[in-house]
Length: 82
Image 1 (spheres, helix red, strand yellow):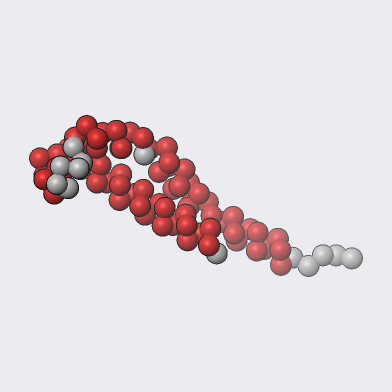
Image 2: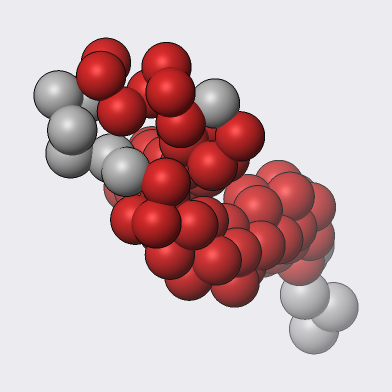
């Protein structure tokens, strides 16, 4: 299912960005030179703050997608009583 793959990859990217920006806030003396000055402490804080809601939404969809597809497949397979 293509939707599952898109959700999984988007969650992976969001998780990596969330971790990297968190490190950019706490370990800015290490992250700033590693990113060649692209990820400063201020930018890391902005990214980290603005990524919380999309990260939680993607995580929720990722967790609920498995049970939802199982329920859908059970309902779809159920024979109709005529």
